[in-house]
Length: 391
Image (cartoon, rainbow, N blue to C red):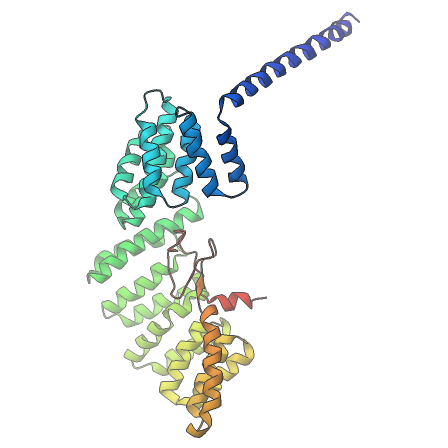
């Protein structure tokens, strides 16, 4: 009974202490808010309203009223960088770093922001210098990520690998995909310089890191072809079917040419027809179409495209059918057909592109690394129309 009475007496005391603490916090908050210039809050309102131009004007006015407000400088610098005005962002963050009253954590933040300004401005050497300084600080992990981005932009794949090996996420699929592509970049450089032995070494490492690296088998086939080992090249390219059959269209032309050099053109043609049957693709159809056109003539090419269009109805397929039909149509009857083809071709330009599934950036050619967001293997090897029509 005494225990229960004690708790009854304690409850009012707890409520009283909580009320006093809340009053103190509210007074402190009001005091701090009154110390901030009105233009600071106006800038926040403009940010919430997605009006960055007016927000910048308000923050500039706030810095004039109270030049010592660190948070306003950080907000202003970030806005300048977001707008692409990297030079102004650099000046803001440099002025912060030169201040004597900055706390250690604020100085590190200002350095990091300055490094990002340099990176945005394309001053990669200066950005690298800043982030190298931050490696042994509390912002070590952040600095490593920015250094990795710098070395990728510089195409310094050896340094990129050294950074990637220090990252903590070695078991993640994204890490394996990224590192395998670094090895592939090194291999591609060796192939360009006709050094197949060194290229094989990098490609072996790429497949050790990521056994599903399609690009490694593509390049391995190129190395074998460079060495005159055509059958080995064919086997390397055929292994892509087990990795990701959507990429077969990327090596279809090479497969056909290797079979042709071996005197096995009919076998190569049958292989591609089988791929087209099981893995429909506009790019693959185009390779088979050109092969049939050269080997069997316009009538056979027309029948091929017609049958494929019945199976997969696309504007790009229709454009190819009209191209084939023009070849088998008498000259005096081509005018109207040619008019229709030109109209269809105008529309197919919009859907005959590859699209990054991370950021949506579209391009006429296939990329292993997205030029917009920098993601690796974010471009599916199919045209946008094929995805739009997919069930």
